[in-house]
Length: 251
Image (tube, rainbow, N blue to C red; front, side, top):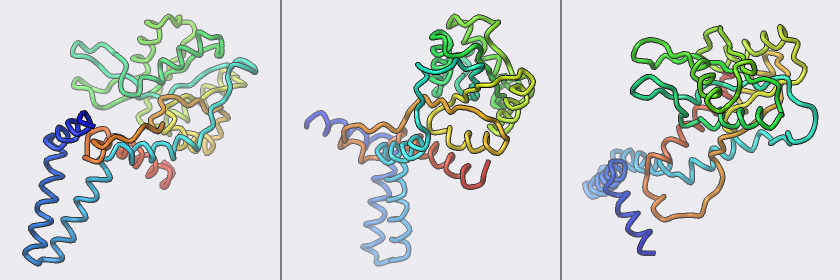
């Protein structure tokens, strides 16, 4: 109990916690001044920040997305001809060397499946425009990390076409699949991203098996400090809201 209290107090003096407390104070002060419209606006912002920064809310939103994709049993059945891995799992260090990013589980899971003999080759794709010295080649960054994990160059295919968005990656996978005459293809990405990716795959007539990883929505024991808005909650709700918006507009 004391530990939870200490954590809660610490969260309240963090930047998000301070903003949340300040909004609460301003709401109460506005109510005291009998300014109902301003009070309602401040109260709405206080509730919005409380929900958007709540890790429990974020995990529930992620779970809603992740539950749309069943996890296949790859230990049985035919070997996949290729596993196509959507970009976004890499970052660069200060020297420009690739390393696993926040969604790096995509790359590790693909390498694990190849090492376990469940796929004949791995396919990397993606470009990024956040580089200080130009666009980043996410596919080559992925290739470098896979080779560091013991996947031979001969088992790696790289999409040369610049793909900045998921829809472009799906189109490139379909073209490569037809060119290589692949019969069984897996589409691997974060579980919360796969509902949108699989919808795009169906529209592009790419016949692929969904391979989820990087689960973010698994339930955890309630902790009082999570009532205070925090960065984890904002990250999860932002990702989930982005995916839900993408599903709504079909992109």
